[in-house]
Length: 362
Image (cartoon, rainbow, N blue to C red):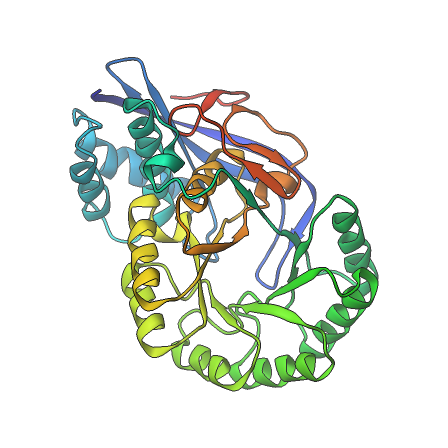
């Protein structure tokens, strides 16, 4: 099974509601789709969102990285030589992690097809079903309460609450949501780098004093402020999850060795795909640091690749793959089955896709 061509297209999917964080507001998914074609007729698919405020990637940079740099390096290679393919993808250019991830997952899709096995089984096969949380965007307390109640009504047991704009208002938001949903629902807080280290400690200690029972706080400070992240970790009881601070295996080693955070959030768009995500899983296993699997604003296409990784690895104990649940339509046939909070992996080879509607490849 030899790579003969790589084609690109754009997938555009409206969201049910605008997605709001401390960093941005988005009303639709607009991502680059990768189609890797082989001489046997097998096709692998990948996807890359343009999340400039987090990864620095734009639609233009993703297309350029793939067409001008990655594609020429891997055309003609055999899928069975996956190590060589991954080395070339990662060594061709620095950063550009979303572009690398899109090609990476398409190659892994083909790797599963080559051996006629669903990808999650080749990655470890730990389980076939995973449970995701759902994100509650930053809005007025009243609107966030209603969104939370709607999510609970759909069967979600884990809510990830976006905060990080105003610490006092953030506390009021969490108080209102906890009161509305009751004690049985798990609340996770995501500040998206929105607080200073001291502000984070004061805010989180207040949440602790109020008995709001927060399971974890995600990326409370700026991504580059590793000392500040460690300061928060050392001074609050709520477990701290490093997200934007961990892109690479090297970042994961620093967090683990210095206890810069209690947990690590793996996102394929940060790691550059499954290849490096597997390295982070191994590091986390070595140091006993549990992981969450997350996603950007992505369609079912790339979220499916993350779901296969989560199903394959035991060290991934928390799942934040709600991207498809935020979309108003699903243009992808096949792949895992997303039923609100439950994600079930199929037994189809690779990622299991059959067809993608509404995308013109060239």
